[in-house]
Amino acid sequence: MTIARFEVFAKVAELESFTKAAEQLNMTQSAVSHAIASLESEWGQALLVRDRKKGISLTEVGQKTIVHIREILNRMEIIQQELALASQLEVGKIRIGTFASASACVLPKILAKFQKKHPKIEFRFYEGTYEEISEWLTTGVIDLGFVVQPDAKSAFDWVPLVKDEMVVAFSENHPFGQEDVVPVRALQDEPFILPTGMYQAHVQEIFRQAKVAPNIRFEVKDCNTIAHMVQEGLGVTIGPALFLKSQSNLQTRRLDVEHSRTIALACPSLSAASPAVKAFLAAAGTAIGAEKR
Image (cartoon, rainbow, N blue to C red; front, side, top):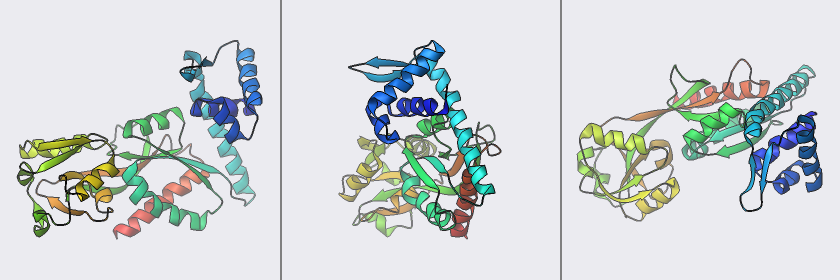
């Protein structure tokens, strides 16, 4: 039982492929297979299900052990960073879970500030839904994750970054462009593009508060697709200001029903976080805080 085998198992579990794991680890596929087989033989348990049609998946034992293996690998990363810090050398990797609007509008500002001071820290990004990011934090796939509206009952430690207001978006020549604030009731006669992804619940709550039934013409999950459809005049939509205001050829206005979401950065445990993660959280707070001021 070695750390090297743990690294191989974690990579195969993440990528669900011996071939992809071998490529990323700069190993031969036979070496990866041998490492997994040796670990299974030593433990006397099958860790992976190998199916030609369905591919690679974790067995029940594999699902239980991968969480602990990732924690061991994360601890090893922290040890390496602490030793490097003591030697005045900076090394490390930060794995971050993010969603579309955070990737486009929040993350770049933090990275720009962080890398000026910590240029040798490496990053790996995982883009997913709110639920996926929470699961990745719980299972140790990522070190940090952008989350929405955490509260005191959250299982993670988190740093609030920005309040993201929900706004209405429409094409350039739409009559709403003459208004400072658009009443939600004015949307009931407009062809509406309903987002079915991560902020659908926020949109539905806005209509519920205003007691308005929208004229839903399209239901679309992908944020970028929604933005392009609005730009083409196929309908109006409601979504987060951070994302919609960054889109060209698209106008936005505030609604008469105030609704927003808080975007935060979360980690499983701030006290147990690596030096690199702690430094990134500090940079995030100052980068976004300076922008708000």
